Length: 362
Length: 144
Image (cartoon, rainbow over all chains, first blue to last red):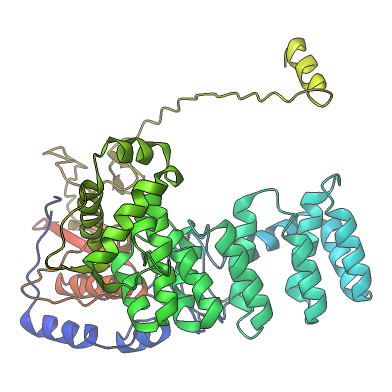
């Protein structure tokens, strides 16, 4: 444990004032800045703002000089040249793509000229050019992806945007650049449900372990419903970051997830931990994952134990060796109970109701 | 790439595939000084690892500078200020005195800024808070 180097006893009046502010139920960046009475011109310099959510905030005029903004994200965030970012760390953030794009366009007149030419021509010409120049065999892919991304940011037409997105997603040679492009697109697609869904889908499939993307996926739990929410929850549950942010994720799941989607989340988390966890965290009859709080009958657990012994070949080699080392259903039953205990650390509770007068088959 | 490897690759498409992997280990040795003179009467204290917390004695009775009073000069003293960027501060409130109800990362980050500001004010810093907390100020003045 790290001990404190410096200890301060703040006056009671100061603590009372701080507590009054902290007690607010507000959660968004913009609302909290107002409640905490923070000064955009001074208070965010040199600040730790990693993975912060700027959603629905106008941060024009904010001074982030020297701040750590890695992984900062958001949707419908308004920022421009008056948002001061000198000396700030912005990799993997909503700022990274546009800053890099600007640098690349400024550094290469030919790229800039091509962008200006294409934007003045018919949109079909842009799609043809991008499709041709983003082929894997193209020698100018690096420059072409910069032009394509600039055209994408500039486009209003939904068909043009969707077509460009299709080619751009195959154009980035560096994963980080593609991730930053998606984070930027997410910020600017808050009104375009179709585009937003496409971006979330790509993020979910490729970048759920990225801190900024994980923050975006978490924020989507409250904003989505039905199948969209299910897919977001599965991605969150499968991400290795779900364990790190367990309390926050569980808060969001409890508050916003639909019942069937809660079960999908449980299934995803259990699957990430191991195949035997996924196997026992579901109803043995319907095969639907358990809810985050579930009461099951001892008979269900016995059925799982029986299936475990019969189907242990579906587990990994290590699990199989372990399963084979057990002498019978009773041992597997005990193992399942111990898994249920372990799952408490993930925020899930499985209560087993014992059955009277049932003896074990040996 | 050796010639033998090229022939193996050429044969792969015709009759069989063969996987080949290479690994390379490169050691980077970075020397980091815990105390670095920045110039302009400024020193930087840091631990070598990225997330290490400053926890030690860094300038133990070593003179950072010496000064001599000159009769009739318009400067009669010096101030030594230890400033820490908010992003480098690890503020842990006493839970008995201040209950933190952080539910989201955004909320926790802004609470940390709020606390840094409060500490900066409490320490009666000369400058208005701008992301730097003056955790220690020492002043020394000559009689003339």
